[in-house]
Image (cartoon, rainbow, N blue to C red; front, side):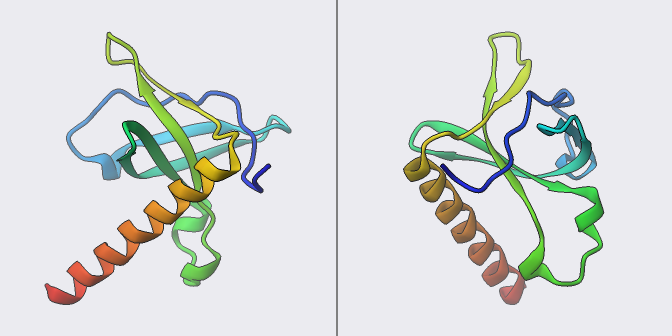
Length: 113
């Protein structure tokens, strides 16, 4: 099993134009609530994933140590969002690899601009 935290479903706000302003409150196994910023939602093999960063890590200068949470992301037919733990190690590895690729692409784009 992966080293990611196990969480209960989060309260994900309804879709807004600016994802930067969206926040999610996660309830971890020990009932600790963590307020998170949505970094991105991306697709991999017909499944959506969401990447969340605890707000307390947002001001952290050491990017190598920044903690993020990655989950499967779903919306029901009414557009209500929900998340689900990634239980499979191979799936988790593929998703984290794709997220790292997205980070690299963003860094290149930033350098080009």
